[in-house]
Length: 205
Image 1 (cartoon, rainbow, N blue to C red):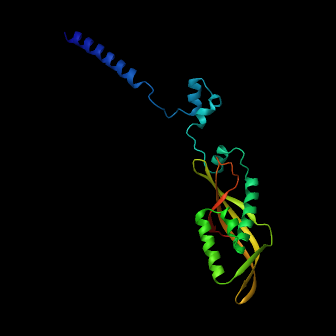
Image 2 (cartoon, rainbow, N blue to C red):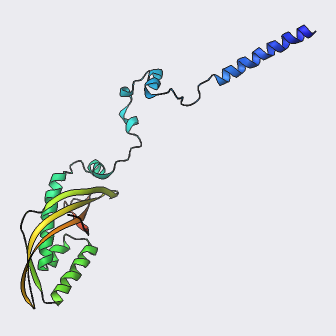
């Protein structure tokens, strides 16, 4: 009997060990040695052969790439050339108190701020004209898609101009150098190609 029992117990042990091996020997999840190359070899597909849609899935475009994705025709050089023209036009219109020109180029909050400054100057009996000594320098500081198709471009302007002013105390000439960050906004769905100035900040030269 003892010998028979030993044989039975030995058979049961072999069966249990085999079942444990069949479970613990399986590959579950990603293994430490599972590099992209080994996974590709195992699946029979090389990385270069994987569909591009899978590689790009889940990628969120930001900044200039996001703007160009919505408007493939957007050209930075063309935009900056237009921004420089708008900058000169706005600075001159502000100095001359030309509210009609400013209203077409500024957002309501910026227009209100400019209008208050013009009104204060008028109340003091002052007038001013501006002459640019050189073409302003314009560099794209930031680009973003704010909401949906609303693009915002922040441009750093460096400019030198001569301001001539007249007031109760007489005339004055002042040569100025400025560094500012101007943010322009435009809906990429709009047929209107013009951008609106929505924010002005001082910047380091």
